[in-house]
Image (cartoon, rainbow, N blue to C red; front, side, top):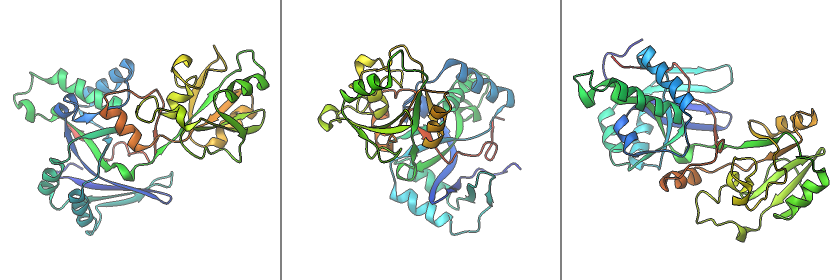
Length: 326
């Protein structure tokens, strides 16, 4: 179905005990180019090519990008008014996530309220955002509408940052690089306090649960060894170093397995453990999640997070909101 009139929508997702609610509308490619929409991730050319080709072939954006913004009481008030009306759509998908959509009764007021929000942050969708910018650049000069052309806009869901939860990307290490398990633990012990772990969840930032030889070990860095004033080098994914493509010399945790292969694993810690038990990896590292404040601080500083620093759930539905370019 295609709307005949411009509109904004309110979109709520509920996954278990968590809910996030955002405003659905189009954001400006120019704001992306001017860094009013701020980034924290480096994009890959091949993925950008894929997203750009997809947009230009369909002549549409097939899904929105998830953006965060520091909260606005004015936006909150308008969203609260919108959800008092009957929902346009209310459905639960096979993964158990409930999706509810309302049409915003006062779109102009929301546009005006967001004009006073200084910036937004790409939470999930860096490659889709970059693809939208590249698609717009390719179509410029062929559309007499100029900045009002639809290719100069792309769809987003803007959520208050305090409603978004970042899940951790855990790490798996394929082999121990010729070291014994005891040698690996001894090296890790020199980076911080190493003790038996009560479980798989690190208790705080600057701590890591390491699964080796069917046991969890807790590694805690000394608080004074982490420069919390540096938004990038205080990230746990940076501190871990060897598992985040950061040279070990840049990290207080020296890579104990030089030359070994590591990769990120989203999802449950238990699955990481089972992959070690099955012999697919030699060691697993359970991470404490990056916070939204850390993400925004990195983006504000114009820095780039190490790969696989964040994982967002629930995901936005593809094909639920489509923005045609005609």
